Length: 431
Ligand code: 5CA
Figure 1: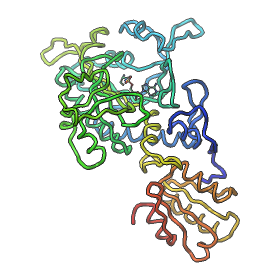
Figure 2: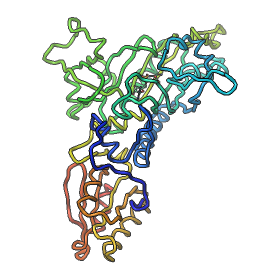
Figure 3: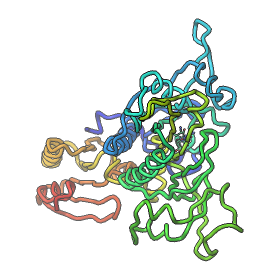
Figure 4: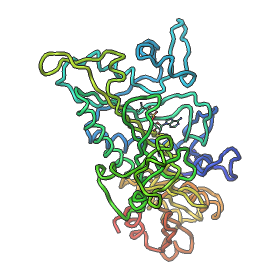
């Protein structure tokens, strides 16, 4: 993509409404634009990141045997009356009527509809276990939307729902999803701590929140300091072992009963990027969901539900990866892998080298943003640092004479002069 043809509305000054780094940087880097309280447009750079996160989440779930569906954002209210949540959800649920005076709502979560889909066609235990998921926009009329897309009213969620003939099998799936979640967050360049949590409005008997440690996080949590070694990469641990370590959300942490000695306990703030729930029969009792069991008798279905805040993750990744100059994207989610800066557009040599770099990388499937604009050098460097692409290749007239260009790694800040061939290898990670 050539910057002169792209849509990247950068903001030079710090927006006054942004209180935390990720919100400030997403606005400044032209990733999002607020349209109403807690409601955002995703501009091209932001959308590329959102798509990358979505793709990684979907790939890992597909690998784990989950099956993707897509349900509507607008839903009739009957199912919610059946489950009892029509009243329980209160003002957080947005309700309205269509032209025929039929009541609709904008789905804040999707247990009711997926259960209706399930019960209308699955009649036998042979189809179980079944784990269905979607990645779809949700609406919750939060009292205090804040921090940009971190706590939005409209937000993108991965919501998964599993169906089982026994509670033991639901527990097995819950453990499996616990491990899958760690894999997903690791691929996104994050270490999340899974804390025992309250299951709130979703319900169920057991739940874990996946928290990314950040000073600006909205949740308070307590955990065994061993997690700090895992986060620092000093130690690796299986999901099973991790589950034995103490970690609890604020509301479940009782100091007198905490099994961890005070000196080994950490208190921190976190961003909740995922939440899994063992539901049991909470919804299947209310909505009478049975299948025929192996012995011919009908069996009440057991469930689990598994959420990931896909749009919130974009903010969490920035909270975990930025410096005073801007965003520092992990490669897996970066909107482009390489930024080319032409310091002298119009100079035949600079133009030719940049074009060759650009064509070669694009031809090899590497995503490139080529700054071919007439901005002054300082502004180009600042913009490229702000948007945080992992690699920058700078082409100027002096270097072009000698046949060298400069390659900068955004994360380490390291800069090196090298030939075009060496630069290609470096940014592709083959050298
Ligand atoms: N049905 C269950 C699991 S699919 C459910 O709705 N769980 S949830 O309420 O915990 O939401 C799942 C995830 O969505 C949360 O862990 C969080 O990362 C994200 N999320 C929730 N509310 C918001 C919000 N207002 N803005 C951005 N992300 C949110």
